[in-house]
Length: 440
Image 1 (cartoon, rainbow, N blue to C red):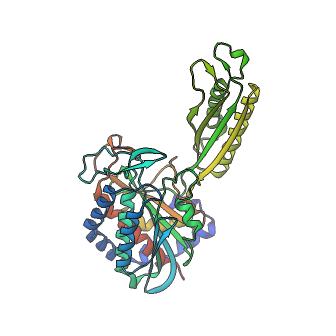
Image 2: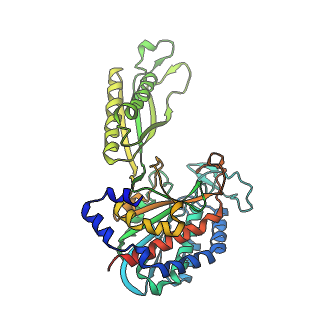
Image 3: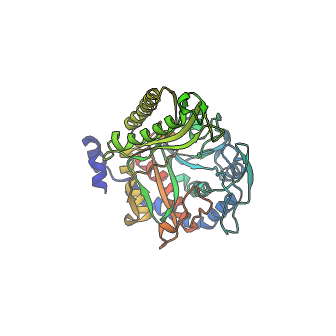
């Protein structure tokens, strides 16, 4: 596995990595202490997770969650900043020795879903989202992320005298997105300087995975998760009576042709043997009556890509196909593309450097390089500024068939809490090993 990773790096960097002892090798005693402390924290971490799960909050509304986090970090003696990126919390732990700065990140927000679980701590919270009454649920595991990072903060605070540098704990709101027109999430936190004062040298994050067995860690160097962009196409034609379509420039038929045309982008233009990509139309709206041809139709959808050049290629193809098909029908098409989340790109050199740490924490046989996924993560905004690595932690009961596990963003989503301690160990050990390996 390491051989594969190193083969993708410049020759000079390969020699440097080969000559230097790994971070974990230099830090064995401290890492053993971290593992012991993380195990002792298990009941606390589970209790935090259950409390947060029972009281979920939508993006940019995580005031209760933020209050719990801030109180915990203050109790540990950390420097605490609140209201970062609206409701975010940042804790700063200064080690007993000089050194670099490493950041650890967790997201805090829930989703507008009504939970369908028989858990004693299942959410019964209600809210209003886009003007509609909704249930609120932690259906993606952000409650576990908060709990694991709170645990890592407690563990590292107990060994801070041995840490050569500073650890910044970033508790981020609105990873799932803000309301239309409202800025939030990682992008806003970066804009407000979360990676500065002190300046962060590297950032790590983990995400629980409901279809990966507990005890396992999954990663990928390079493009790991896709970019996510929203596109809107407004087709302008000419309305008419449904019984006399020859008087119209039918935007419904034109929109249908555009939708079919868009499907040729991935199947015929993207070199799929190199990079996966997705173009999906998710909404189409037009007309108010069955026998009236409307003047306009609007559709919207998402673009996912794992290569920035492919992403730009798809944008250009959407514009070309939509406008030319519309013109061929005598209509016009107005295309808007809104970049939302960049590609989550794990820094290859940092991934190679920290792989021995992951293998030591979870066991080499439990650390897996995975294929890229077309889901998106706004952790990518941190990675645009500093080297970063994003990992997946197993949250499925051992022996369970992944096909039977409820997926993320569904009402039946659930996590095996026995996997949380590995998340705490991973976050804390990555921070300690990175600080010990990097010279100030």
